[in-house]
Length: 463
Image (tube, rainbow, N blue to C red; front, side):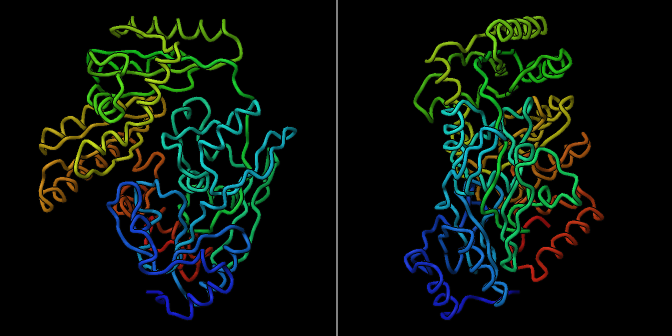
Protein backbone atom coordinates (compact mmCIF):
# COMPACT_ATOMS: atom_id res chain seq x y z
CA UNK A 1 0.00 0.00 0.00
CA UNK A 2 1.04 3.59 -0.60
CA UNK A 3 1.16 6.43 1.90
CA UNK A 4 -2.02 8.16 3.02
CA UNK A 5 -2.45 11.91 2.78
CA UNK A 6 -1.26 13.93 5.80
CA UNK A 7 -1.79 17.60 6.69
CA UNK A 8 1.69 18.46 5.40
CA UNK A 9 0.77 17.02 1.99
CA UNK A 10 -2.33 19.18 1.67
CA UNK A 11 -0.36 22.20 2.83
CA UNK A 12 2.27 21.59 0.16
CA UNK A 13 -0.32 21.18 -2.59
CA UNK A 14 -1.91 24.50 -1.56
CA UNK A 15 1.51 26.14 -1.81
CA UNK A 16 1.97 25.15 -5.47
CA UNK A 17 -1.70 25.20 -6.58
CA UNK A 18 -4.13 28.03 -5.79
CA UNK A 19 -5.71 27.04 -2.43
CA UNK A 20 -9.25 27.43 -3.80
CA UNK A 21 -8.46 24.62 -6.28
CA UNK A 22 -7.30 22.14 -3.62
CA UNK A 23 -10.22 20.47 -1.80
CA UNK A 24 -10.14 17.86 0.94
CA UNK A 25 -12.49 15.70 2.99
CA UNK A 26 -16.10 16.91 3.05
CA UNK A 27 -15.27 19.71 0.61
CA UNK A 28 -15.20 17.06 -2.15
CA UNK A 29 -18.63 16.28 -3.63
CA UNK A 30 -19.79 12.65 -3.49
CA UNK A 31 -19.85 12.46 -7.31
CA UNK A 32 -16.05 12.32 -7.27
CA UNK A 33 -16.27 8.90 -5.62
CA UNK A 34 -17.72 7.14 -8.67
CA UNK A 35 -18.15 7.36 -12.43
CA UNK A 36 -21.29 7.26 -14.61
CA UNK A 37 -22.48 3.80 -13.56
CA UNK A 38 -21.42 4.07 -9.93
CA UNK A 39 -20.67 0.39 -9.44
CA UNK A 40 -17.18 1.16 -8.09
CA UNK A 41 -17.04 3.66 -5.23
CA UNK A 42 -14.14 5.23 -3.33
CA UNK A 43 -13.39 8.86 -2.42
CA UNK A 44 -10.08 10.67 -2.91
CA UNK A 45 -8.50 12.36 0.10
CA UNK A 46 -7.62 15.47 -1.89
CA UNK A 47 -9.02 16.87 -5.13
CA UNK A 48 -6.71 19.12 -7.16
CA UNK A 49 -8.18 21.12 -10.05
CA UNK A 50 -5.27 21.78 -12.37
CA UNK A 51 -4.90 24.37 -15.13
CA UNK A 52 -1.50 23.67 -16.69
CA UNK A 53 1.03 20.97 -17.50
CA UNK A 54 3.36 22.61 -14.98
CA UNK A 55 0.81 22.19 -12.20
CA UNK A 56 0.29 18.51 -13.05
CA UNK A 57 4.07 18.04 -13.05
CA UNK A 58 4.44 19.69 -9.65
CA UNK A 59 1.75 17.48 -8.12
CA UNK A 60 3.23 14.30 -9.60
CA UNK A 61 6.80 15.12 -8.51
CA UNK A 62 5.59 15.52 -4.94
CA UNK A 63 3.34 12.46 -5.01
CA UNK A 64 6.16 10.35 -6.44
CA UNK A 65 8.61 11.49 -3.76
CA UNK A 66 6.06 10.81 -1.03
CA UNK A 67 4.68 7.58 -2.57
CA UNK A 68 1.09 8.89 -2.64
CA UNK A 69 -1.41 7.34 -5.09
CA UNK A 70 -2.82 9.60 -7.82
CA UNK A 71 -5.77 9.18 -10.18
CA UNK A 72 -6.69 11.55 -13.01
CA UNK A 73 -10.32 12.40 -13.82
CA UNK A 74 -12.07 14.23 -16.63
CA UNK A 75 -15.87 14.48 -16.79
CA UNK A 76 -16.38 11.21 -14.94
CA UNK A 77 -18.47 9.70 -17.76
CA UNK A 78 -16.59 6.37 -17.74
CA UNK A 79 -18.39 3.10 -17.09
CA UNK A 80 -15.73 0.81 -15.58
CA UNK A 81 -14.43 2.70 -12.54
CA UNK A 82 -11.19 3.77 -14.24
CA UNK A 83 -11.31 7.26 -12.71
CA UNK A 84 -12.17 6.14 -9.17
CA UNK A 85 -9.56 6.71 -6.44
CA UNK A 86 -9.45 3.16 -5.06
CA UNK A 87 -6.69 3.98 -2.56
CA UNK A 88 -7.79 7.52 -1.77
CA UNK A 89 -4.82 9.82 -2.22
CA UNK A 90 -4.83 12.64 -4.78
CA UNK A 91 -7.34 13.06 -7.59
CA UNK A 92 -6.18 15.38 -10.38
CA UNK A 93 -9.18 16.86 -12.23
CA UNK A 94 -8.43 18.19 -15.72
CA UNK A 95 -11.81 19.63 -16.80
CA UNK A 96 -10.53 23.19 -16.36
CA UNK A 97 -7.77 22.50 -18.87
CA UNK A 98 -10.35 23.13 -21.58
CA UNK A 99 -8.65 25.35 -24.15
CA UNK A 100 -8.43 24.71 -27.88
CA UNK A 101 -4.87 25.91 -28.41
CA UNK A 102 -4.35 25.86 -32.16
CA UNK A 103 -6.01 25.06 -35.46
CA UNK A 104 -3.34 24.25 -38.06
CA UNK A 105 -5.04 24.31 -41.47
CA UNK A 106 -1.81 23.44 -43.29
CA UNK A 107 -1.20 20.22 -41.36
CA UNK A 108 -4.93 19.54 -40.72
CA UNK A 109 -4.47 19.30 -36.96
CA UNK A 110 -6.02 20.81 -33.89
CA UNK A 111 -4.14 21.07 -30.58
CA UNK A 112 -6.23 20.87 -27.42
CA UNK A 113 -5.98 20.53 -23.67
CA UNK A 114 -7.42 17.30 -22.19
CA UNK A 115 -10.47 18.91 -20.59
CA UNK A 116 -11.99 20.02 -23.91
CA UNK A 117 -15.37 18.32 -24.31
CA UNK A 118 -15.97 16.14 -27.34
CA UNK A 119 -19.06 18.15 -28.32
CA UNK A 120 -17.12 21.43 -28.13
CA UNK A 121 -14.28 20.09 -30.26
CA UNK A 122 -16.78 18.73 -32.82
CA UNK A 123 -18.56 22.09 -33.02
CA UNK A 124 -15.25 23.99 -33.33
CA UNK A 125 -14.02 21.70 -36.11
CA UNK A 126 -17.28 21.94 -38.06
CA UNK A 127 -17.44 25.74 -37.73
CA UNK A 128 -14.06 25.81 -39.48
CA UNK A 129 -15.02 23.36 -42.23
CA UNK A 130 -13.42 20.25 -40.68
CA UNK A 131 -14.54 17.01 -39.08
CA UNK A 132 -13.10 15.32 -36.01
CA UNK A 133 -14.36 11.82 -36.85
CA UNK A 134 -14.38 9.94 -33.49
CA UNK A 135 -18.01 10.04 -32.35
CA UNK A 136 -18.67 8.26 -29.02
CA UNK A 137 -22.24 8.49 -27.76
CA UNK A 138 -21.27 10.51 -24.68
CA UNK A 139 -20.64 13.98 -26.11
CA UNK A 140 -19.88 15.51 -22.70
CA UNK A 141 -16.82 13.27 -22.25
CA UNK A 142 -13.43 14.99 -22.32
CA UNK A 143 -10.88 14.43 -25.06
CA UNK A 144 -8.39 13.26 -22.43
CA UNK A 145 -10.83 10.57 -21.37
CA UNK A 146 -11.52 9.58 -24.98
CA UNK A 147 -7.80 9.15 -25.61
CA UNK A 148 -7.29 7.25 -22.35
CA UNK A 149 -9.90 4.66 -23.35
CA UNK A 150 -9.33 4.78 -27.13
CA UNK A 151 -13.02 5.62 -27.56
CA UNK A 152 -14.74 4.55 -30.77
CA UNK A 153 -18.29 5.57 -31.54
CA UNK A 154 -20.76 5.50 -34.38
CA UNK A 155 -18.47 6.62 -37.21
CA UNK A 156 -15.79 4.03 -36.47
CA UNK A 157 -16.97 1.72 -39.27
CA UNK A 158 -15.68 4.21 -41.86
CA UNK A 159 -13.25 6.47 -40.03
CA UNK A 160 -11.76 4.36 -37.27
CA UNK A 161 -11.34 5.11 -33.55
CA UNK A 162 -9.65 7.77 -31.43
CA UNK A 163 -6.19 6.20 -31.82
CA UNK A 164 -6.35 6.90 -35.57
CA UNK A 165 -6.63 10.65 -34.92
CA UNK A 166 -4.00 11.22 -32.24
CA UNK A 167 -0.81 12.61 -33.80
CA UNK A 168 0.93 13.82 -30.67
CA UNK A 169 0.61 13.97 -26.89
CA UNK A 170 2.19 15.91 -24.05
CA UNK A 171 2.19 13.67 -20.99
CA UNK A 172 3.33 13.98 -17.40
CA UNK A 173 4.89 10.74 -16.22
CA UNK A 174 4.50 9.38 -12.67
CA UNK A 175 7.78 10.99 -11.52
CA UNK A 176 6.61 14.40 -12.76
CA UNK A 177 8.76 14.54 -15.87
CA UNK A 178 7.12 15.94 -19.00
CA UNK A 179 7.44 14.18 -22.36
CA UNK A 180 6.20 15.04 -25.84
CA UNK A 181 5.24 11.95 -27.86
CA UNK A 182 4.68 12.13 -31.61
CA UNK A 183 3.78 15.50 -33.07
CA UNK A 184 2.24 16.88 -36.26
CA UNK A 185 4.02 14.42 -38.53
CA UNK A 186 1.88 12.05 -40.58
CA UNK A 187 4.34 9.13 -40.39
CA UNK A 188 6.59 7.99 -37.57
CA UNK A 189 8.78 4.88 -37.43
CA UNK A 190 11.18 6.24 -34.83
CA UNK A 191 11.53 3.43 -32.30
CA UNK A 192 8.77 1.94 -30.18
CA UNK A 193 5.48 3.83 -30.37
CA UNK A 194 5.25 5.26 -26.87
CA UNK A 195 2.44 7.44 -28.21
CA UNK A 196 0.29 4.40 -28.91
CA UNK A 197 1.14 2.86 -25.55
CA UNK A 198 -0.30 5.95 -23.87
CA UNK A 199 -3.53 5.82 -25.91
CA UNK A 200 -5.95 3.45 -24.21
CA UNK A 201 -3.82 3.08 -21.07
CA UNK A 202 -6.61 4.48 -18.85
CA UNK A 203 -4.39 6.85 -16.91
CA UNK A 204 -2.05 4.14 -15.63
CA UNK A 205 1.13 5.20 -17.50
CA UNK A 206 0.95 9.00 -17.61
CA UNK A 207 -1.33 12.02 -17.50
CA UNK A 208 -2.26 13.63 -20.82
CA UNK A 209 -2.02 17.43 -20.70
CA UNK A 210 -2.10 18.29 -24.41
CA UNK A 211 -3.08 16.49 -27.62
CA UNK A 212 -2.44 17.10 -31.30
CA UNK A 213 -5.37 15.63 -33.22
CA UNK A 214 -5.90 14.94 -36.89
CA UNK A 215 -8.83 16.54 -38.70
CA UNK A 216 -10.35 15.81 -42.11
CA UNK A 217 -12.36 18.04 -44.47
CA UNK A 218 -16.01 18.23 -43.44
CA UNK A 219 -18.24 16.12 -45.72
CA UNK A 220 -20.77 18.36 -47.46
CA UNK A 221 -23.62 15.88 -47.18
CA UNK A 222 -24.62 13.40 -44.47
CA UNK A 223 -27.81 11.34 -44.76
CA UNK A 224 -29.25 8.39 -42.86
CA UNK A 225 -31.69 5.52 -43.30
CA UNK A 226 -33.80 4.01 -40.53
CA UNK A 227 -34.46 0.38 -41.43
CA UNK A 228 -36.95 -1.69 -39.36
CA UNK A 229 -36.89 -5.50 -39.17
CA UNK A 230 -39.29 -8.14 -37.94
CA UNK A 231 -36.69 -9.60 -35.57
CA UNK A 232 -33.28 -8.86 -34.10
CA UNK A 233 -31.86 -11.84 -35.99
CA UNK A 234 -33.02 -10.40 -39.31
CA UNK A 235 -31.64 -6.95 -38.53
CA UNK A 236 -28.23 -8.06 -37.29
CA UNK A 237 -28.05 -10.80 -39.92
CA UNK A 238 -28.23 -8.14 -42.61
CA UNK A 239 -25.05 -6.39 -41.41
CA UNK A 240 -22.50 -8.87 -42.89
CA UNK A 241 -24.30 -8.64 -46.22
CA UNK A 242 -24.12 -4.84 -46.11
CA UNK A 243 -20.40 -5.06 -45.34
CA UNK A 244 -19.85 -7.55 -48.19
CA UNK A 245 -21.67 -5.23 -50.60
CA UNK A 246 -18.79 -2.77 -50.07
CA UNK A 247 -21.19 0.05 -49.33
CA UNK A 248 -19.27 3.07 -48.05
CA UNK A 249 -21.23 3.60 -44.86
CA UNK A 250 -20.18 5.97 -42.10
CA UNK A 251 -22.22 4.22 -39.40
CA UNK A 252 -24.18 0.99 -38.95
CA UNK A 253 -26.07 1.11 -35.65
CA UNK A 254 -28.29 -1.63 -34.21
CA UNK A 255 -30.99 -1.27 -31.54
CA UNK A 256 -34.17 -2.98 -30.44
CA UNK A 257 -37.68 -1.60 -29.87
CA UNK A 258 -37.37 -1.89 -26.09
CA UNK A 259 -34.44 0.52 -26.11
CA UNK A 260 -36.29 2.96 -28.38
CA UNK A 261 -39.28 2.97 -26.01
CA UNK A 262 -36.98 3.72 -23.05
CA UNK A 263 -35.55 6.67 -25.01
CA UNK A 264 -39.03 7.97 -25.87
CA UNK A 265 -40.03 7.92 -22.22
CA UNK A 266 -36.73 9.41 -21.08
CA UNK A 267 -36.78 12.28 -23.61
CA UNK A 268 -40.55 12.78 -23.75
CA UNK A 269 -40.34 12.74 -27.55
CA UNK A 270 -41.68 10.36 -30.15
CA UNK A 271 -39.39 8.22 -32.30
CA UNK A 272 -40.37 8.06 -36.02
CA UNK A 273 -41.31 4.36 -35.79
CA UNK A 274 -41.72 1.91 -32.90
CA UNK A 275 -43.74 -0.86 -34.57
CA UNK A 276 -40.92 -3.30 -35.19
CA UNK A 277 -38.71 -5.41 -32.90
CA UNK A 278 -35.35 -4.24 -34.31
CA UNK A 279 -33.77 -1.44 -36.30
CA UNK A 280 -30.63 -0.55 -38.20
CA UNK A 281 -29.58 3.09 -38.53
CA UNK A 282 -27.33 3.50 -41.57
CA UNK A 283 -25.42 6.68 -42.43
CA UNK A 284 -23.63 7.79 -45.57
CA UNK A 285 -21.58 10.96 -46.04
CA UNK A 286 -19.79 12.46 -49.02
CA UNK A 287 -19.09 15.54 -51.08
CA UNK A 288 -21.64 14.99 -53.86
CA UNK A 289 -25.40 14.62 -53.48
CA UNK A 290 -25.65 12.22 -56.40
CA UNK A 291 -23.16 9.72 -54.99
CA UNK A 292 -24.70 9.85 -51.49
CA UNK A 293 -28.21 9.29 -52.88
CA UNK A 294 -26.98 6.43 -55.04
CA UNK A 295 -25.30 4.77 -52.05
CA UNK A 296 -28.41 5.12 -49.90
CA UNK A 297 -30.68 3.75 -52.62
CA UNK A 298 -28.41 0.74 -53.12
CA UNK A 299 -28.27 -0.04 -49.39
CA UNK A 300 -32.03 0.45 -48.99
CA UNK A 301 -32.70 -2.01 -51.82
CA UNK A 302 -30.29 -4.55 -50.32
CA UNK A 303 -31.99 -4.31 -46.92
CA UNK A 304 -35.45 -4.71 -48.46
CA UNK A 305 -34.26 -7.72 -50.46
CA UNK A 306 -32.97 -9.25 -47.22
CA UNK A 307 -36.29 -8.87 -45.41
CA UNK A 308 -36.44 -5.32 -44.03
CA UNK A 309 -39.96 -4.07 -43.42
CA UNK A 310 -39.17 -0.63 -44.83
CA UNK A 311 -36.39 1.94 -45.24
CA UNK A 312 -37.12 5.47 -44.02
CA UNK A 313 -35.03 8.44 -45.08
CA UNK A 314 -34.00 10.50 -42.07
CA UNK A 315 -34.17 13.62 -44.21
CA UNK A 316 -36.16 16.28 -42.37
CA UNK A 317 -34.85 18.39 -39.49
CA UNK A 318 -37.60 17.02 -37.24
CA UNK A 319 -36.81 13.40 -38.07
CA UNK A 320 -33.04 13.92 -37.74
CA UNK A 321 -33.48 15.48 -34.32
CA UNK A 322 -35.83 12.71 -33.20
CA UNK A 323 -33.59 9.85 -34.35
CA UNK A 324 -30.21 11.18 -33.25
CA UNK A 325 -31.38 12.53 -29.91
CA UNK A 326 -32.87 9.12 -29.15
CA UNK A 327 -29.66 7.35 -30.22
CA UNK A 328 -27.59 9.65 -28.05
CA UNK A 329 -29.86 9.02 -25.05
CA UNK A 330 -29.93 5.20 -25.13
CA UNK A 331 -27.51 4.73 -22.23
CA UNK A 332 -29.22 7.26 -19.98
CA UNK A 333 -32.65 5.97 -20.97
CA UNK A 334 -31.82 2.37 -20.02
CA UNK A 335 -30.22 3.62 -16.81
CA UNK A 336 -33.40 5.54 -15.96
CA UNK A 337 -35.52 2.42 -16.53
CA UNK A 338 -33.96 0.44 -13.69
CA UNK A 339 -32.64 0.75 -10.14
CA UNK A 340 -29.05 -0.19 -11.06
CA UNK A 341 -27.23 -1.61 -14.05
CA UNK A 342 -23.84 -2.71 -15.32
CA UNK A 343 -22.47 -2.97 -18.84
CA UNK A 344 -20.94 -5.68 -20.97
CA UNK A 345 -18.94 -3.65 -23.53
CA UNK A 346 -18.10 -6.54 -25.80
CA UNK A 347 -16.62 -6.63 -29.29
CA UNK A 348 -16.91 -9.62 -31.62
CA UNK A 349 -16.21 -10.14 -35.33
CA UNK A 350 -18.95 -8.48 -37.37
CA UNK A 351 -20.02 -11.84 -38.75
CA UNK A 352 -20.75 -13.08 -35.20
CA UNK A 353 -22.79 -10.14 -33.91
CA UNK A 354 -26.14 -11.86 -34.54
CA UNK A 355 -24.99 -14.93 -32.59
CA UNK A 356 -23.95 -12.81 -29.64
CA UNK A 357 -27.17 -10.77 -29.53
CA UNK A 358 -29.16 -14.00 -29.72
CA UNK A 359 -27.11 -15.36 -26.83
CA UNK A 360 -27.85 -12.31 -24.65
CA UNK A 361 -31.56 -13.13 -25.04
CA UNK A 362 -30.85 -16.70 -23.94
CA UNK A 363 -28.94 -15.47 -20.88
CA UNK A 364 -31.76 -13.08 -19.98
CA UNK A 365 -34.22 -15.97 -20.05
CA UNK A 366 -31.91 -18.36 -18.23
CA UNK A 367 -31.19 -15.92 -15.38
CA UNK A 368 -34.61 -14.23 -15.41
CA UNK A 369 -33.03 -10.80 -15.73
CA UNK A 370 -33.54 -7.95 -18.18
CA UNK A 371 -30.67 -7.39 -20.66
CA UNK A 372 -31.36 -4.64 -23.23
CA UNK A 373 -28.66 -3.79 -25.76
CA UNK A 374 -27.63 -1.59 -28.65
CA UNK A 375 -24.38 -1.05 -30.47
CA UNK A 376 -22.12 -0.34 -33.37
CA UNK A 377 -23.01 -3.30 -35.55
CA UNK A 378 -20.67 -2.09 -38.28
CA UNK A 379 -17.59 -2.78 -36.15
CA UNK A 380 -18.95 -5.52 -33.87
CA UNK A 381 -18.92 -3.39 -30.70
CA UNK A 382 -22.07 -4.02 -28.65
CA UNK A 383 -23.26 -2.36 -25.45
CA UNK A 384 -25.22 -4.85 -23.39
CA UNK A 385 -26.78 -3.77 -20.09
CA UNK A 386 -27.73 -6.05 -17.20
CA UNK A 387 -30.55 -4.42 -15.21
CA UNK A 388 -31.18 -4.96 -11.52
CA UNK A 389 -34.82 -3.82 -11.42
CA UNK A 390 -36.37 -5.23 -8.20
CA UNK A 391 -33.67 -7.73 -7.22
CA UNK A 392 -32.24 -7.74 -3.71
CA UNK A 393 -28.54 -7.00 -3.24
CA UNK A 394 -27.31 -10.58 -2.89
CA UNK A 395 -29.41 -11.93 -5.76
CA UNK A 396 -28.41 -9.01 -7.99
CA UNK A 397 -24.69 -9.60 -7.45
CA UNK A 398 -25.10 -13.33 -8.05
CA UNK A 399 -27.03 -12.96 -11.32
CA UNK A 400 -24.79 -10.13 -12.51
CA UNK A 401 -21.66 -12.22 -12.04
CA UNK A 402 -23.26 -15.17 -13.80
CA UNK A 403 -24.39 -12.98 -16.69
CA UNK A 404 -20.90 -11.52 -17.14
CA UNK A 405 -19.26 -14.93 -16.94
CA UNK A 406 -21.64 -16.34 -19.55
CA UNK A 407 -21.47 -13.41 -21.97
CA UNK A 408 -17.74 -12.79 -21.83
CA UNK A 409 -17.20 -16.53 -22.12
CA UNK A 410 -19.37 -16.57 -25.23
CA UNK A 411 -17.52 -13.57 -26.64
CA UNK A 412 -14.22 -15.46 -26.32
CA UNK A 413 -15.76 -18.46 -28.09
CA UNK A 414 -16.74 -16.12 -30.92
CA UNK A 415 -13.16 -14.73 -31.12
CA UNK A 416 -14.20 -11.50 -29.41
CA UNK A 417 -12.69 -9.33 -26.67
CA UNK A 418 -13.76 -8.06 -23.27
CA UNK A 419 -13.94 -4.37 -24.22
CA UNK A 420 -14.55 -2.57 -27.47
CA UNK A 421 -14.20 1.05 -26.38
CA UNK A 422 -14.93 1.65 -22.69
CA UNK A 423 -11.77 0.10 -21.30
CA UNK A 424 -11.12 -2.27 -18.40
CA UNK A 425 -10.77 0.02 -15.38
CA UNK A 426 -11.53 -1.83 -12.16
CA UNK A 427 -14.94 -3.28 -12.94
CA UNK A 428 -13.80 -5.54 -15.79
CA UNK A 429 -10.24 -6.39 -14.78
CA UNK A 430 -11.11 -9.89 -13.54
CA UNK A 431 -11.90 -10.79 -17.15
CA UNK A 432 -8.64 -9.38 -18.48
CA UNK A 433 -6.49 -12.47 -17.97
CA UNK A 434 -9.13 -14.78 -19.45
CA UNK A 435 -9.29 -12.59 -22.55
CA UNK A 436 -5.68 -11.50 -23.07
CA UNK A 437 -3.95 -14.51 -21.53
CA UNK A 438 -1.41 -14.72 -18.74
CA UNK A 439 1.61 -13.91 -20.92
CA UNK A 440 0.08 -10.72 -22.36
CA UNK A 441 -0.96 -9.53 -18.91
CA UNK A 442 2.60 -10.20 -17.72
CA UNK A 443 3.93 -8.03 -20.54
CA UNK A 444 1.48 -5.25 -19.62
CA UNK A 445 2.62 -5.40 -16.00
CA UNK A 446 6.21 -5.05 -17.24
CA UNK A 447 5.29 -1.93 -19.23
CA UNK A 448 3.55 -0.48 -16.18
CA UNK A 449 6.67 -1.17 -14.08
CA UNK A 450 8.89 0.72 -16.52
CA UNK A 451 6.65 3.80 -16.61
CA UNK A 452 5.59 3.71 -12.96
CA UNK A 453 7.99 1.68 -10.78
CA UNK A 454 6.28 2.81 -7.58
CA UNK A 455 2.82 1.98 -8.93
CA UNK A 456 1.31 5.28 -7.74
CA UNK A 457 -0.61 6.23 -10.92
CA UNK A 458 -4.17 4.90 -10.96
CA UNK A 459 -3.39 1.81 -8.85
CA UNK A 460 -5.68 -1.22 -8.92
CA UNK A 461 -6.79 -0.81 -12.52
CA UNK A 462 -6.55 -3.00 -15.65
CA UNK A 463 -4.90 -6.09 -14.10
